[in-house]
Image 1 (cartoon, helix red, strand yellow):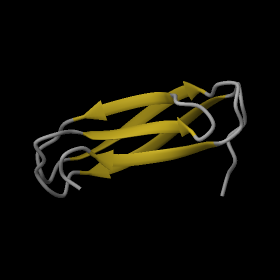
Image 2 (image 1 turned 180 degrees about the vertical axis):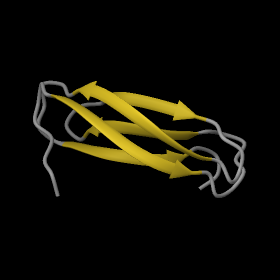
Image 3 (image 1 turned 180 degrees about the horizontal axis):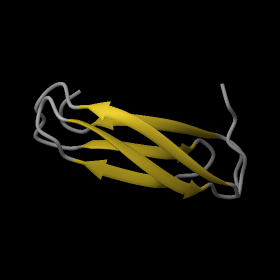
Image 4 (image 1 turned 30 degrees about the vertical axis):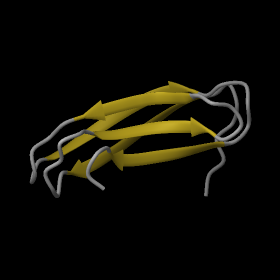
Length: 76
């Protein structure tokens, strides 16, 4: 586990593979657990079987608790 600090810039890099078709999109976001805000929102669409990578840089806000989320809208 790694705790993200407030008012700090982070760069997250990851590889991804689209394993199924979706009518929506894939996404990554750093979400604050103490305020209703998202940081570093990134979304993309890829056909099934596509392999890729992303680099996302974001700066957290003034609160302390954050979590990183990867997801697939309208599909899982």
